[in-house]
Image (cartoon, rainbow, N blue to C red; front, top):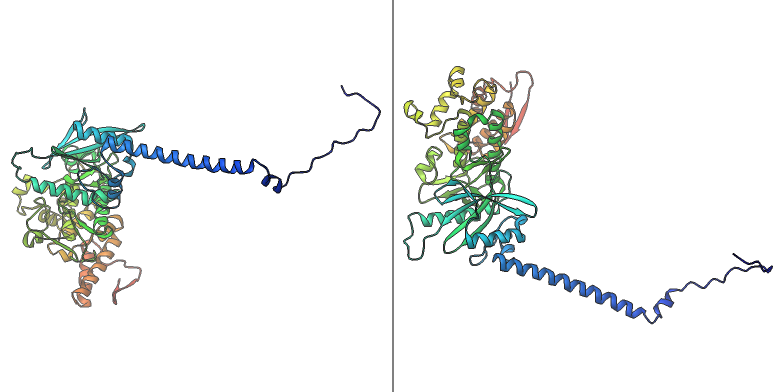
Length: 462
């Protein structure tokens, strides 16, 4: 309780606010500045020490140094037998431990065998990245034991492994199967770690569960393969020729998105312009690929071009529509003796014969007109003359656009070929008219008058 004294109370005297000069002259000012910088330096040193210990742990547990990882991501070949990790998301202690286990103990158990090929067995495995499980496919390439004679084709298989590493190991596209890592385990074997595709290959799915693939899914598969081929032929540098495109090398993820796989026979080339015609080539000493999918000019000349991949893709389109493969026995009972010749006759035949040629799992489901158009694109892709085939960019546009634009893109391609071959205007117009009639269109539009100028050539739509 305040006591009243009767005297007037005065306000307490305010002390002057200390200025900047007061702090600068304070005896602890320099000590505070020194303590701050010393603490900051100690923190930086502790952080660098922690990072160094982490890198040393990765080195001792996985045998994969930071230098080798950076070299792989920059496109250089690391020295020795160091593992090569192509996916930055897998650069962690969990995957390092997986690599160490794979090199020491082999494929982790339980691992299910999901396939066997010319290079070895393929396993399905699951590894944990933090709290997230990741399913992968592991291809094992066995090496001959010391003193044992190398099996026939061993050097060829090793060249295929190197081709996989040089091509798909450094490509990033949603329609190409990603190679996650290459893990050598000398002197026993090599391991290639891929993304796992739950639905397997397109070949097996069409053979065993063709009813699961309705036409919209097959159309999406065709467009995805075309996107992947366009990336290989027109976008990636150096350009890549797959040379073994077939349904068995098309894998499907859980959403039926296609992934082009098996780049063991792929060739990289830097020539040409990737446009119409066979502008860039790769010469081979022997014929590689799969019978029924190899372009006829490759048989004769052993020169593989981007148009050879286009031919193989045309055969895949025919397989998607008809459900028949070049190796089916029914081809031995017909006059044509080949799937491509049979498809050409079917396209030129009556509607009843075309309806009977459609895959039985697609009959009566509608979409017949779209399937006929896709089959015509297959005929374009499998022309005997490679210069008449479209490039992959045109193929992708044809599969994604309306029939009118399909005809227009082919007419423009014919104009470009006509300029290269010094053909006359009448010949170009005749080709365009022929392509229009092949689509059931007497002209582009009977109502609208359109004039398109390309390379100083004029096409008038009547």
